Length: 337
View 1: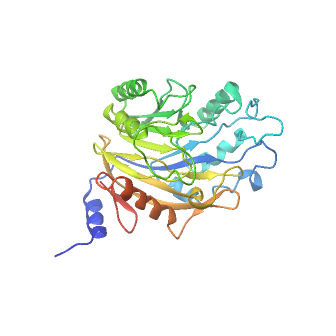
View 2: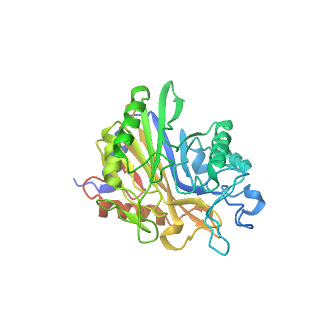
View 3: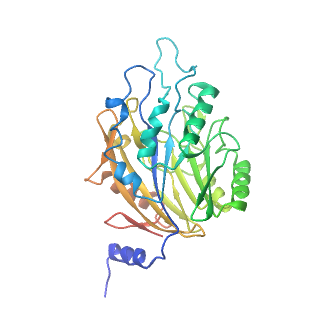
């Protein structure tokens, strides 16, 4: 008797133990910006996440990368007269849309978190704190969360000096080891890698973009798992990248642009994303999961994608880059170790 790969994956998922945690993770989120003028979404953002809200909420915990600050003040040094300014500042009251969509965890470690200075960073952190959204980003910060009587930790990294640094693996490993001493599950987020439509492949060694060191991502991701991380969630290239299973832990090398209104190129693969569902055992082992395809329409409104283009692309990239170590992905886009 011969079983298809899809049926084998389904049987594996069906026989998996009941997960301790079912987490859903999205990539870059920027809900509109006050700079430049005219880049906020219709209805003051109230319906921007409506097309994906049900997907985001259907989880024990939901994670996103907050691509830029939530603040109403500050000044940017990025905006020069006559120049093309890519500095983001989302109004603080937009945090309610993240809350309504069920966001629990957020990375603030990225190349836009400091767009309007340190005061704006602090305002972002206070805004997230007030709504109970756990965050990590600046050097030394670890987000802490109680869940089912256990402790969870979030440690977010980027390739910039103000954040926990992807390129300082020694310090990164130390942060993760320290978090693992008190947390049952440690989630690591990183913002790194080259950018753009041609940056879908995970490379060996250091990646560079516009002359900047954007990290040796394979070494980083595997290194933090060696130090005790249980799940690694990547973003930064603005496109999807493959998945890998390393020491029974899942690495997502990039989740793409999830909800990036008004200022992003969303053509081709730049407009495709997935919401990644991951089921973890109580000891952090990867048990399985699922891919939910999304895309952005118009200036950056996220909606579900019935054509499943994002999931198909992610499966293709996983098979290409991690033929032996990638999770199995069946025709229903379910994941199995």
